[in-house]
Length: 289
Image 1 (cartoon, rainbow, N blue to C red):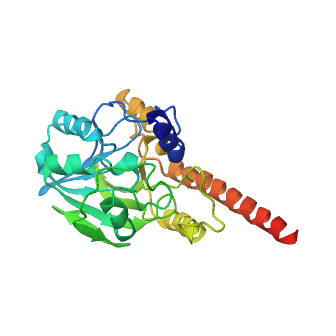
Image 2: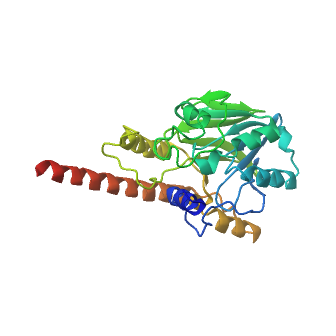
Image 3: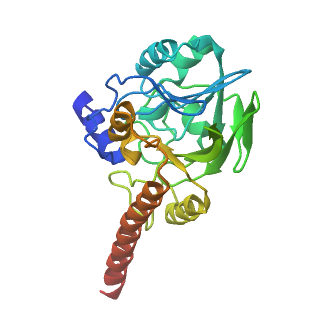
């Protein structure tokens, strides 16, 4: 597969919005989002630095070459890349975890993953139900398996894992709380909800139960309390536009966007329900012939 085709496939799979670049890994300014959460990712492929008194956490490592960008961003913010102790991910797709090996070498951090994506990460993507050998990356060893509802704690900071599979088989949405100006906010890092190109829900050969997983994912996302809406792609939550509003001196933090979170879920679930209904209708027609 050509480099262009690979990038196009990932861009389509991500269902990015908001004018993101095709690949989504152009350099982007590092900045503090809210509380102890800092943005150290690219213009669409996100990476977050969560700072604690006992070391730091990075969520999502991007492409194979993204860690060099992450390192520059971390250092520009005044932190040390070697203080990172834990590497988390939202989904074991190439555009979010291909940089795990390089980032682990930089940091010496432990790699955490949901149980359903351990084999995907350790095979370098070859056991992924959708992409398999199309989009592979350097395999990694998972140091700690994260279960649904498990809190990951470091230095008094807690991130909780919520399994939201469908977009990937072990997709994980993370939540935490931050304090800003004396107020406590609930933060949600959405793992992913879009439907990968070519994926169907009826009779999926490599991912049986994918439709049920998607349905449960939307239930889970709706159950989460969200004040600050973030995600695996900046396009999910209008990152670039909100960043510029923040830089322009917005009266309120633009990333505090509970309505945007609800709108995102509504839109994504509508797409899922429509495709599922169309597939079921098509199957019925075939059976009636």
